[in-house]
Amino acid sequence: DAAQQNGLGGGDHVKPRDIEELVLKRGEMTTHRRRAPIPQLQCTGGTAFEREDLYPSRVRCFNAKQRNNDVRWDCVAEDLDKR
Image (cartoon, rainbow, N blue to C red; front, top):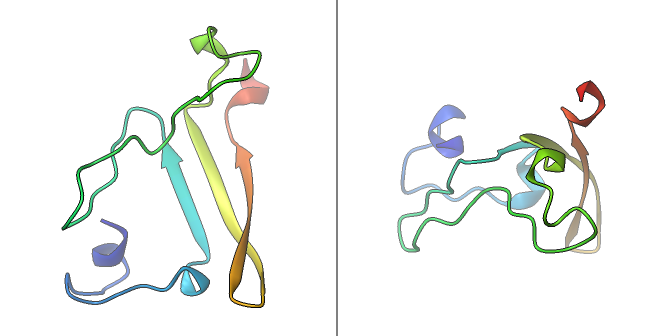
């Protein structure tokens, strides 16, 4: 998982403000010690809801900046322009 890839042990906590980038993948599940896995990407509505061919398979999110204690993420679907 991301914490292990960054050299952190399983008991270490990672604060969202310390994460520079996240990559979310369609068909992949989250991992957590105390919670059940959930999809990393899931369409929840909109005009393309019934068109699975329009769903991104990969989304890259960047930690844009922090305002107060809130992290703001800028996300880009990487593969939509190739279709």
